[in-house]
Length: 314
Image: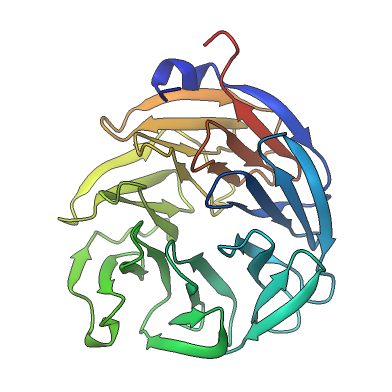
């Protein structure tokens, strides 16, 4: 089914899961869209089958905590950040709930964690003002960039470029094969006093970069020119959460939660709100939305996780 403004507005909640008892801090899909994983402040990890719409397993990480969980390219494994003990990134076997490898190096909270779309490389950034490149096959850091300011990071859809959002004012693009030579492009955006960039992601077609903030707007940036295409506004964020937004697989829409308990969607062609979906979310912890990369399924989460699908009338 083609995603458009009409059927987005008619999406319905098909499933609700209440396994987590605290705020869900991350959602992530497998590359094939068949599986999803969520992690929570209650230190639990839940696996879902997106085809059947069921929960398949619950795991716990009570010793280290869990945040920013991501599937590796094998859906039986995942990487995640720690919330206790130290700031090590951990590589977990979901099959037997045992750690395969540890990635030590960051000295403060990790705020970015992302897998390469093409291989075993992944990237992390931290409040220690560094960006690190890793390979799942080795515990040793494969590349280190020490910066003057806090940064967030993201891979492009082809896995050849990564972007760094530095000090909420510069977007720097690096060739993964020669990142040590510095960025091949730097875009400067006006720094805002009342909000910070909290995450960034490329659109699936690679043409735009979405800068998520802890304010009441987000920025769509042309990934070739660095120009701001649109500021996405209309949602509320009075608690200044780090709201996690998502692109639709066709890159035509952006979805984000709001403290008025609605999911907002914007057209990337016009920058206008295309639809809003009322939800049963708890506004005190509603921060996560994620669109399935292969199927017409949207997930949203506070402490409960919801799956949204098109109306049967569409």
